[in-house]
Image 1 (tube, rainbow, N blue to C red):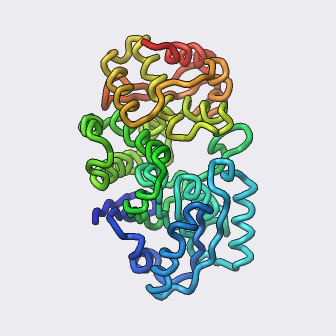
Image 2: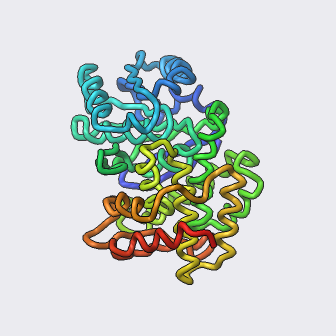
Amino acid sequence: MKEICVHASTPYRILIGDRLLDRAGELCREAIGACRLCVVTDDTVNALYAERLESALTAAGYEKPLRFVFPHGEGSKNLQTLGSLLEFIAEGRLTRTDCLIALGGGVVGDMTGFASAVYLRGIRFVQIPTTLLAAVDSSVGGKTGVDLCAGKNLAGAFHQPSLVICDPTTLDTLPDATYADGCAEVIKYGMINDKPLFERLRFGVKSAQEDIIAACVEDKRALVEQDEFDRGQRQLLNLGHTVGHAIEQCSHFRISHGSAVAAGMAIVTRAAVRRGLCPAGASEALEKLLHSHHLPTGCGFTASELAAVASADKKRTGDRITLVVPYGVGDSRLYPIAVGELADFIREGLLAL
């Protein structure tokens, strides 16, 4: 088992190791003590892992937890589902000393975290990611939220978990496309500031899955501890996301988050090459690695369509928006531009080199 400690406003441990799901009860006992619990999950993960988790919790002395299950997918990550979750835990009479457990991928974790941030003005929650994307990214760092009609993650809060339990064996049931989504986030870390990780990924994520998850979590931990509330260097984690979120929204979420982020990374990197910021070899290496993980490097939308959506991104301040641009493999930097220049920047990135 690997253990990584995050020293944020609420310090917590991230535990990574096979079969940890079956030890979730004892691990929760150590982190949060005796309390009432509510497991939040989607219908897919519920059928796969909820009973195992419940058995582990009751074996450790917890009473049978409440369980809230919602339809899987980005379409459920909204205020309506959040409201239903809040009403459910209120009817269950959870108190401020009780705890939610997010069992699932990024949608489950984001929504559970947001519910725990606002219910009774804040209760604890535990993350148990069951997708690669959640394991390496969304379960760590305390960003929570839901989507609005105007865009992704526009309502949310910073709220750190009390514990993260990552059992890589739960990734064995992922469809190939869902696993590839997580690979996009792994590649992102390599492009941001971890060239050794990028080079290692030539052999695939599964070649050393647990070590690679831990490497990504360490990279994110360092940025979160430096800038917990996303006002500076933590924004580097948004590489590919401004354009990627626009791709998702333009597709009405038919394009998955990981595929959209992959395309977003490739687009901003090609634009950086055209502007003389990044060597062409870095773009070529990125696209080769994305293709080897069955990820896209472009999309079917126009620059105007993407810019219209991206201009409402939460990273906008006034008439400027901060992009993350690679200057080379393992060397990404914040790149503020005027909102009016965004369409031209994206247009340069949509064209093949």
